[in-house]
Length: 436
View (cartoon, helix red, strand yellow):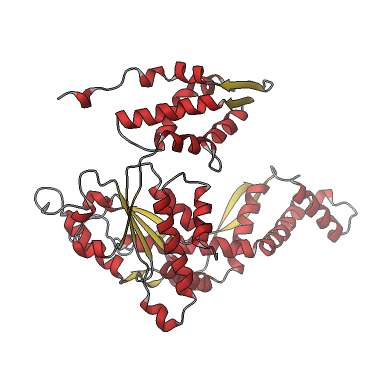
């Protein structure tokens, strides 16, 4: 998708409030990928992505910015926690696993796109397959009708959903069980190794027509998709468009921590370094180069600092941005101005039980004030605080709703209601942090 940095930021603004500096940095990084793709192959080889490190408290949008960015351009994206990796030689997860996970994500992404492309053909083939089954099942109803007319009638009924709950017995292809042949290399299906040389096992199953149609469409789509083309495109996207988000990188910052039961944090940094610098990782789909992947690291950095990372790793993250704690105004905007905002979500959930939920502007302001106050006086968990506050606020309404076929009930939440129902989380504040 050919978007300018300003357009990228505008798209991110629909889902994430504030953090203009971080949005600007990722927008430029994404646009630079497009610019690089327009260059000659010789020059393109020389230009690598400028990785980003984000510093800021939890819940302010670090992960969401990266995730929305990837979704915007349909780029393969994974989020990993730096703390789950251990130094080579210790029992734990190998750092190369993040690249293998990214490739798996790229495979799924491309396969979904190819499946959508052949969806019409696959559906038509599945319908014909189902009609043959139904024709045999319903042959007693055929009477004097010509077989072609009878099958056409069955097809029309199938499309209308007449047979959705009819139970049929059919044979479906059974995928070979995936096995982990090499520890840490991920599960490998025998089908991915031997391809069409392995005969596909079939198993008889009893399903409703609706369930069987889903399985038939998936099988027919699989026949129409060129898996080699999927693999090649997925590897290309992972190498050139992939985004790896390394969270909690501040937890492995800090030096001289080589003693005791904990493995060296600096050792984990040194193991991550070759991946970020650019190396080749073997996956079950073939070798993958990490040179042109975009790495976005993030952490709260309350105790440690970015400068506590080893210099080599710092050098691979030349762009550093700091995200700010959310204010009352930010909370108001999160509740009202984002797509599918939290208030819209709760209103939609309660509408299922015929509750017409409305918030007055002063109620929204009161919720934002309380969320900001709790973040300031206890742990700052950013926008996640709103989920806590909203759950407490709507607890009684959610509990009492449902259980009958009632007419639409209008419920208005005002400031008085907010203050009354949130007393229990505002009056008895834990004062332990103020005790010396």
